[in-house]
Image (cartoon, rainbow, N blue to C red; front, top):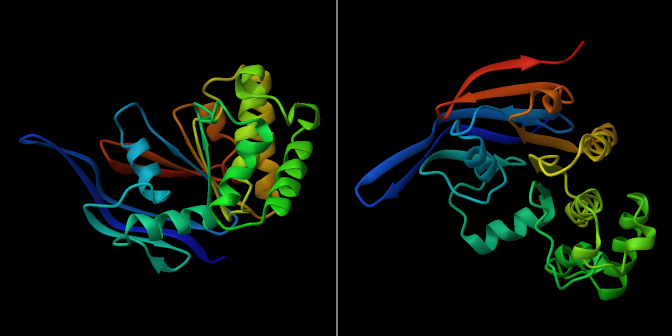
Length: 229
């Protein structure tokens, strides 16, 4: 399998006035195409910073980040956003749906930024929502949907541009156990179809779904464990 993400000696330093906080220190991590990995660690371990770096939402202070073999460490925001839009789908704990757009419009939005025609956007959004059991909820607004339904809309949106990588940040954090299992089972099914899944979590029960777990502490990888049998 080829590496789809590779992080080499990456550090991220945030400055507040005269104070420096090293959120991630000399991080080395690689993810192969089709893997399901989890990044785990307690609060303050550097999980969120690592996720932002892996997902090209942030740039490193030092080190290099490769996405599909391309060094993206020094790209400008415009170039990064184009790469993100094509290669990575994001699922967040807070859903982050746009309140004044319907479920279908939320799912179609990422395709708009990739220049996909209105007809194709609508067709793809409808297909994804049907696949996630939301055929009857396409024209509902986020405040008319349950938490589980909102997260399924968010998953459909993450899949809109058929990305190679799905980056899920505590995707079940606001869900009950039943809806949480639905979300994780769906991520597992996507992985079986060849998608690369990166799950960021503090919940060891969720990490059991992953093949490999990177354990973070104080901005460094403390250990790597495997769930393969």
